[in-house]
Length: 228
Image (cartoon, rainbow, N blue to C red; front, side, top):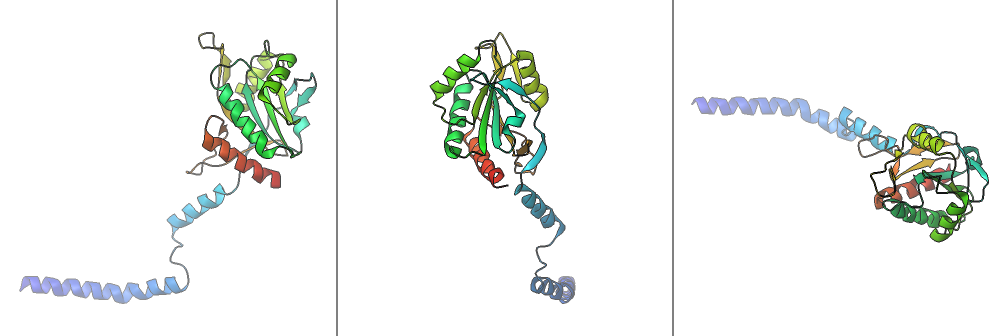
């Protein structure tokens, strides 16, 4: 008897809920409001933000000598989209892979006058203009907008570590005497560092030049900036 009363009570509650809730649900569906909850709105906002490249800040000022003993500065690339890296020609570890990544980027945008590449050596005492010219030829670089730069070592290391916040430094204990990251910086036509967001909506800051996905990502984002 008690069980029957419990079933009746539960059935009554379900009936009342149906009478109250079902019309509201139907009304939300008819008015296309069923997916406008707060959580979904937040997800939508993140997805929308992911469609645009983040502006990190102005590129640090630099003025260095290229492989032809010509002064090249950040102003030289004004009006161009460019990728910037720190490397050295005798690097026995990550640089060869970075070189291949940059070559693939060069090949994709070769012939576009609004695109360029900047490779700054962190071992300028060895990497003179003449050495960089030979290195450039060895790689088979074709673009006149790809400059290999050298200058004062302390100035370059400060530019890398404090200007871009991309690690580079001397270390006598490692093969080659220097260590550095394999990150690529992306700069737009106005001299602003740009990047995409990760899956959580956070700016990635720089692109991984040692990773195929990172290289693919920066190629896609270069294409976006060239259209701006």
